[in-house]
Amino acid sequence: MAKQNKTVSSEISVIDFLNSSTDSEEKRNDSFRLVELMREWSGCEAKMWGGSIVGFGSYHYKYASGHEGDAPLIGFSPRKAEFSLYVYTPDQNQTNLLAELGKYKMGKACIYIKKLADIDTAKLEQICKATIAHLQTQ
Image (cartoon, rainbow, N blue to C red; front, side):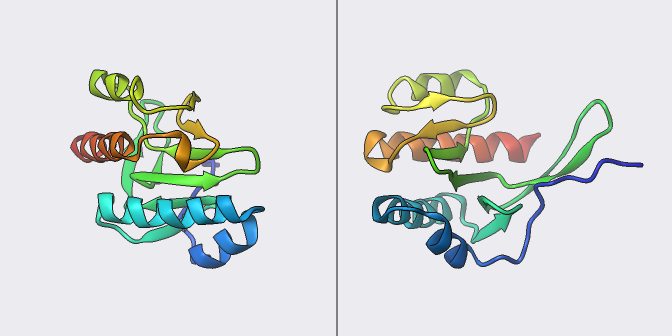
């Protein structure tokens, strides 16, 4: 039996999700600002992926193992401790941009930030646009 992807697009309201899942006014404001920015940078409307990821656009992937599915081009999740930004692909240009991004932690497949004020959103824009370009050429 094929493994079912957990992170698929859904019809959950992004606005309702952000209003109910953010525990502080600052996190809620940062969340709505990220929606505005990522919508502008991607040219795509916000859509929920799974129960907690706000994504923009989509691409199809297929691994060597045969596992395949769809995922957002860029996105974020306002987790309790910090934001998870799904905006990174490991190429040299992005590595250089990360050095100038600001205060963040790096995960296996995402960037973690506490708040938008901790980072340079112009650098984040460049990272997002490079991610989109990379994924659209794969």
